[in-house]
Amino acid sequence: MALILVVLFTTPAAFRSPTAVVVMALIGTAAVLLQLRLRNETGEKQPLRPPLGLNVLGIVLALAALFPSALHLGPRAVQAMVLGAVCSFALSSAFILHAFRRHSTKPE
Image (cartoon, rainbow, N blue to C red):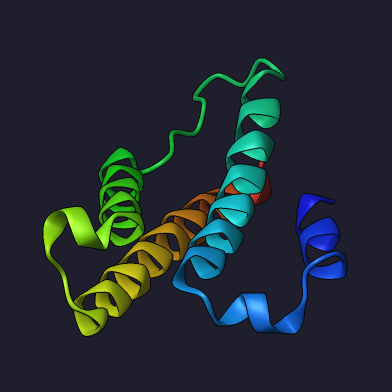
């Protein structure tokens, strides 16, 4: 729902910004993590866990990309950090969604 609102009420030029790309990736990851939390509250024997290392890496890269002047980074380094953050969040979400699929197909 948040992703839809962002896309509807944002101009197309805003999506050329590295910040917008990171925000979109964070919204998607937050949705997957919320789904994970809701699923784990159902009382399963082995709750699924998100890949903490990938999420921390994504957050560090996103924060570094948001403050390039403080870190004296050039535009190419910022783009690389944004890409790294988005890839990290995408991999984390993919691992969680794969675990959902694998976990739900096991016979009880």
